Length: 142
Ligand SMILES: [Zn+2]
Ligand SMILES: [Zn+2]
Image (cartoon, rainbow, N blue to C red; front, top):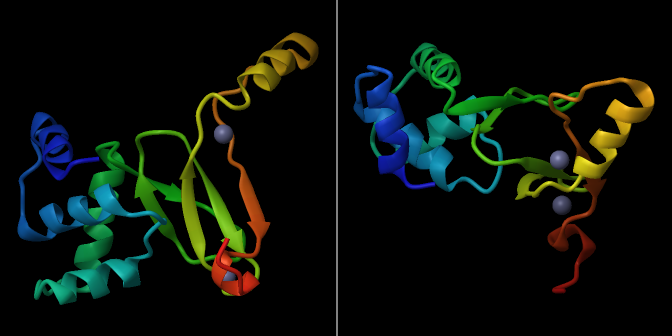
């Protein structure tokens, strides 16, 4: 997602655009994996933007409340965040513990309709993680 589209959402919700905020929108808009607060701090430092942990957490809370990002909760993991738009699942490597986001489309709609029919359960959301080994850990190129 383009940074300007995200900026537009922030502006529509009367949020100010700061250097830190703009950079974070950039990071989330282009990330292929959920980002932890430390990863954000590193990336900000690379752009010579200094932000302490408090600032980063305050910013994450703001972006979450604005509906731009959501928290990714994986058992035994540090807090991670990703863009709240689009339906994503995660590939978790059992070797290097890397986490990658993959976009999915309508894949469980049939099952969720069945749950409503057979279990009288209305699904609002689901989370699904795949555990396995990434290309690097498998030592192959395909
Ligand atoms: Zn791996
Ligand atoms: Zn799904």
